[in-house]
Length: 187
Image 1: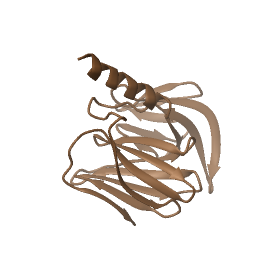
Image 2: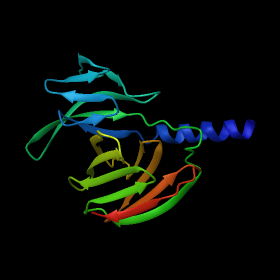
Image 3: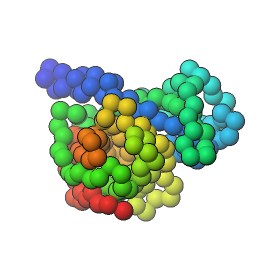
């Protein structure tokens, strides 16, 4: 029991070192959150204003802390947030398997069972993530930045580790869950 608890603790500590740096605008959708214009978010059916330093709960222990930084991507303005990434007991970062590598400058797709993750480059370090479940309506859509050359993404009960080295992104599955379908392909 002590070893299992230690593994979970180490895994959680490693994940806190790699929060997602996300960029939010009115097109951003995360779990039950729908971001609106004028720094407002639809949270559990209620429209709520947010500002610098505010913490927006996502699900479970996940949250987004608004940093107040703003950037422009193309002609659109985005606000920066830092999203905590939490794992289930089976999503331990000590258990990873590489499932593929792709060029970092091209869109690609990861399919794990019925979870589909589309990853589209915006620039050298910012990528749009669009996550969906086959057969369900709606999807999550947000932009993440590779701040430390590694991004952990936990979507639809599957955790991914994306690492960028030069012009290549390596894709890993995190944890010891078994999956029937695993596919990484260019779009």
